[in-house]
Amino acid sequence: LLLAGLCVFLALTLGTYDAGAPPSTSVYPPAAHPHNACGKIGAYVAHGLLSGLGVGAYYLTASLGILAGVLLQGRQIERRRLRALGWTLSLIGIASLAQLLVPHWSPGPTIGAGGYVGALGRAWLESHFALSGSVVLLLSVIGGGLLLCTDYVILTISAMIFGASAKQVGRGLSMGAETLAARRRPRRAGRRSLRRLRRRNLRRVRRNAPSRSGGLRDL
Image (cartoon, rainbow, N blue to C red; front, side):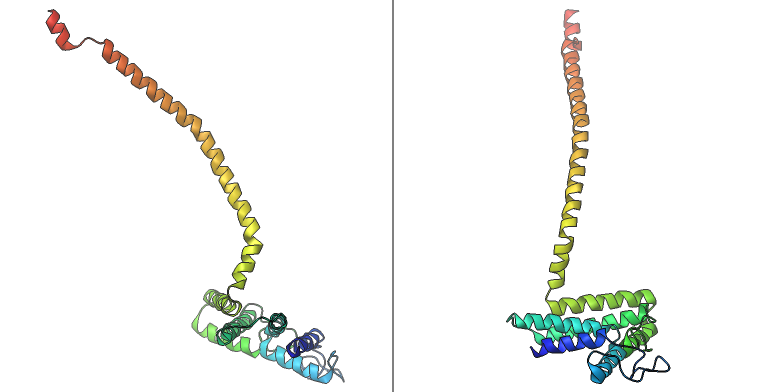
């Protein structure tokens, strides 16, 4: 319940965050009072999360909501350290990817879309890899982290989403193969019948033709 309450608090603070109100300094002159549903504390919390994580703050809130739902159902979470490691990797990957691809899309802080975490990740990637290599590496980190923290739930959901379309494609391919096979069958049957007729005619010619030994005996 405490975790669910925290998730609701974070959702309200982030949803009602105002970049023109203190403690933000991105807009001048700033507003006299923070316009946040959770008051001054909510404004400071939202500003700190968005400055540190950027769009990763929304991912953090959504993850806490999912965790609260799982715990309220009475399920036990196994391998907590491994799952926490995977979730941390996915959070760093999302923040770095946002800072790398859409750095100017920021909900408020001027540091960028990925916050300070994304800025550090982008600086390290740009010093070691090109843009395409950085994107591939970040997508791999995000995918691997999600697999670790969700225990292959992502694969199950994607299979459920894309299962129907894959089945339709498979049915279409099988129908196309069957039509091609049906078209080739009469051609093959015609060729086989022609071969049989040729063999029969050759046998008849060989039987009716007089042999050389028979002609010499008659002489």
